[in-house]
Amino acid sequence: MRIGYGYICDSKKGDLAIMRQRLNITLPQETIRLIDRATKRRDRSRFIDDAVRFFVKEHRRADLRAILKEGAIKRAKRDLGIAEAWFLL
Image (cartoon, rainbow, N blue to C red; front, side, top):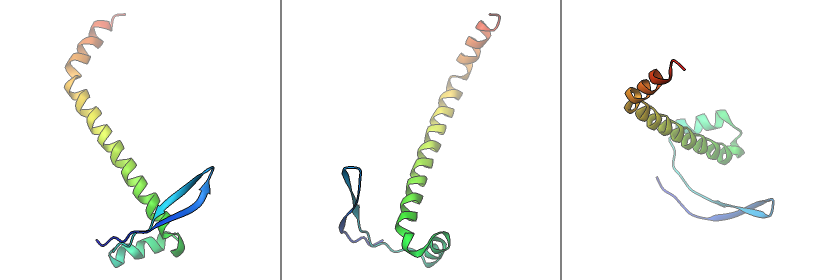
């Protein structure tokens, strides 16, 4: 992937200016067709930004689920014992 750099100060959001960086990336033609079918041509940057943010957010959730599942499996015997001890209450 080739990347070129350039900074753009976008419209203001509140009192803070939104800084954007121009990137030149190379994508497969089929990926570009998919992007163009999903959005208007001039909205490619917004679409890619939303897609990357969604992807990262979902990966964080998946990682958290895996960590929680692993912990629950490790502590299952202990938790069952605690539940049985308190069951009569």
